[in-house]
Length: 492
Ligand SMILES: [Zn+2]
Image (tube, rainbow, N blue to C red):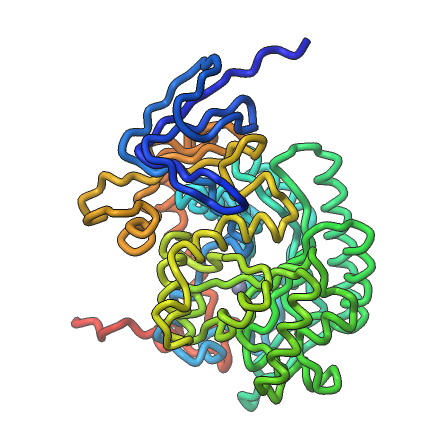
């Protein structure tokens, strides 16, 4: 007989329950779980309980699902007011001989640091992404074995896979933008990624899953797209591909694929399916976008059950947003969220996503806090084909976040979700439970017991070190102080 797993009951001023296919709110509620599964959500559980947790004036809700989770030190802060990004290292100079600018130890540290930050913001399920601007080419199998170790030891639920590509943008000597391709390298990267997904499956850790993560659509040659399509059919695992992200991509895809849109190209290669997860969805309709061509792309997305991932914070910083938010919703396209940048703060993304949706639609009711809360929970779960994630309901995984409702900075509360979305942020997080296990408690990483202050110090050191390599990669190799100007001149 299996040994008895402890039954734990958590009480909180508010619990996000689940009823008739949607979230509901339970005042003075309880969540009861045994092992990794929830037994009960509501009030007055009558069964035997082994351990009681009183969370007090807090909101207990489902963990957030981040489909484009920052898994790296974020360098986009450098370009925020140092544009255009291609001049300041966001695209590599054609005369740079690619090499890895991080040591393997530094890469490993970045994962520990970044995955910790995700948990500290209430993200219990992550599909991490890192930048490959600092790489000899893309990511490797070995490095992701380590990523799996980190995820397992921190206790985060993750879908992992090394990024691969068969091409990347460069800045040519004359300042124009071009691309460099190496299809064999892309195919080798895919083979490694497939082997990694299989290895993770053998590992048999329920919190760790494999995904295929080609870097971005314009970095895939036709041969790589065809091979990827076969791999997805064989593995049936989620695939994440940056798509409809920028004008450069739209133009490049149109040039190489008879003026097709990125969405049409995915459809042509049978890659538009319910496994496909597509950050950013900002440029639908192809090179000559019209209301009709945008509607055609939306129809393809809807019919395929693919997921579009909004990343509000990073999009807003780049003066863009998912312009078709309302039309995508209208067409029942699955919408989910990604943090993609620092801070990986899902509450902030819910707030900014709501604001940007209203601004692009010029309508105050274009999006609500609840719409974005659903995207960060139920939308992510649908993308992963997991109806036991993103909700607190009997039988679901006990992935629970606790946000304090007691902070003076939160202001006044009439509804805990509205207040947390518009007045709160990730710093209001108090606890995280994943698969029934405490991984963050009182804002500490209690499972892996990492020292957050020490992580912070080392991250700053590595960031400063990486910054120093920017002249090497950047167009015309200007010195560092010309690449990145501070907000105001330093008074010396
Ligand atoms: Zn992204």
